[in-house]
Amino acid sequence: MAEIVKMPKLSDTMEEGVVAEWHKKVGDQVESGEVLAEIETDKATMEFESFQDGILLYIGVEKGDSAPVDSILAILGEEGEDVDKILAEEGGKSSGGDEKKEEKEDSDKSEDKAKKEEGSKKEEKPEKKEEKKETKAPAKQEEKRPAATSETSEDGRLKASPLAKSLAEEKGIDISRVRGSGDNGRIVKRDIENFREDKAVSPTGPAVATRAAVGEESYREENVSQMRKTIARRLSESKFEAPHFYLTIEIDMDNAMQARKMVNENSDLKISFNDLVIKAAAVALRQHPQVNSSWQGDTIRYNDHVHVGVAVAVDEGLLVPVVRFADGKTMSQINGEVKEFAEKARNKKLQPQDWEGNTFTISNLGMFGIEEFTAIINPPDSCIMAVGGIMQKPVVKNGEVVPGNRMKVTLSCDHRVVDGVTGAKFLDTFKKMMENPVMMIA
Image (tube, rainbow, N blue to C red; front, top):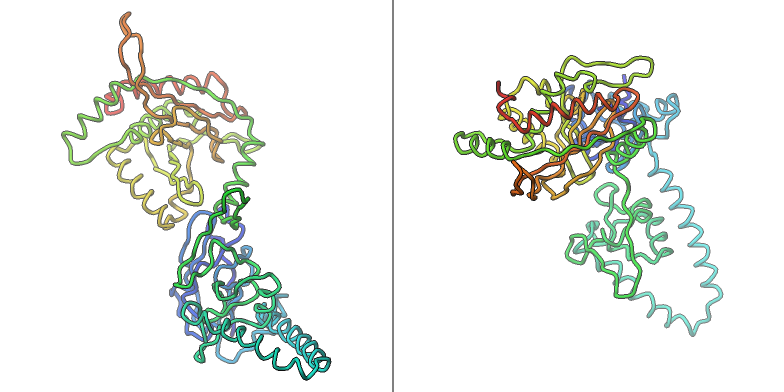
């Protein structure tokens, strides 16, 4: 009996998913545990395994398209089962989906076009027939020209639906430069509608970018990724719902720099300044549980465990993998975890267990030369700490002006949970840890 496979909810914040890749096509046998498709969530691209055996009878979301959680992703069953009946019961589209609709539109448009051409032929005078033949010839050459770069059929003709060709002509788009997303690279209506000049197919294959001429206005638009949509929604909610206030403190980094240098010179395991920051924050959180907390509406949750989220930049935005029980880990252990998370984030291989459960977040832009900034609280945390770079500047020590190394950090606090004094005490403890790194080891 046929079973409907629905778009899975692969993260706690996922509302819709994009099919990045299908590993099976209609008619293929699928076994339980086999990877059916790759789904792009708001945080990563994840492999989705089938939970049942059967033949893939229907694909409800084409590659590159998005669909809400719990919508029809596919149907598995036995060969010959009536898919249309199942979709009708679910209130879904017919098994032909958009392609059938497009074929109908193609047929209607082609029929209208044929009628118009037939009418125009009747009105043509005999002496113009020779002229018409001359104007048609270049059109045929133009149609065959892209055979070397675009998906073509066996006879060398460009594979595109009649509606796509008509739409391209209306929009003035060279259809030979459009990438097809239909079966076997066939160009369909959505490819024309989503066509962008900077992603066009060049005569040799790859996409070509265009540059505006001097004095000519130009721009490009890109579809918003699932990750960027979620970042926008969650941080907007945080900024407007949580009453933020900010506390900034400057830290003497001379001892931290010396300690890091000694560790890296005498050990195979290297540590970074970010590892020192994570460890110092984790130890300080253990001493100030009010900061290691979250607003729950009717209650405030004070966490006994310390899970530090570390903001990692990727092309689409920011991911926040979590170093769990950070207060009980060595700096070399923290270093290894953060490096692994960064690699997984760049390759979109982070799993839900990697990014869920943070109780506090650190955002470090010091490596980019940023001296000081503020960060928006990452829900459900009540605080986030923004870390700037280490700057060499003149400082006063023992009544003399000497060169010193200073770092600024800014704590963003949710005033519903954390008061100014509470945040200040946390930063004071954090500062002591950073200025005396031996305290983190003892």
